[in-house]
Amino acid sequence: MHSHDEAVRELAHICTMVLRLEQLVHSEHIGRGTVVTSPDYWRARVKATAKLAPQLQQQAGTLLARLDAIDSAIQRLRGRARVAD
Image (cartoon, rainbow, N blue to C red; front, side, top):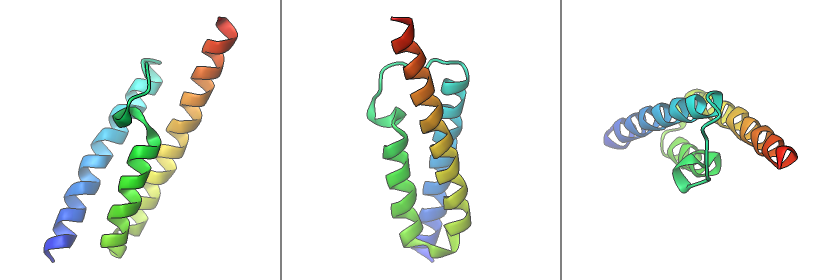
């Protein structure tokens, strides 16, 4: 039970960070890539958490889909920035 509660808290934290990344992408202020602005970093944390609590697979899947969308948006923004240079 204890590890399930930790997994729930971890996914809640990740969800908050994914929301912040979505806001940054929407405002086009993603800036330089750092570990915490990398969708890959959060994707790895989601997958690790989902392994600990399989009953959270649906929530983890939703977060992974959101991270995929963020990753695609970042790539589009970076592509536009290269074209503008």
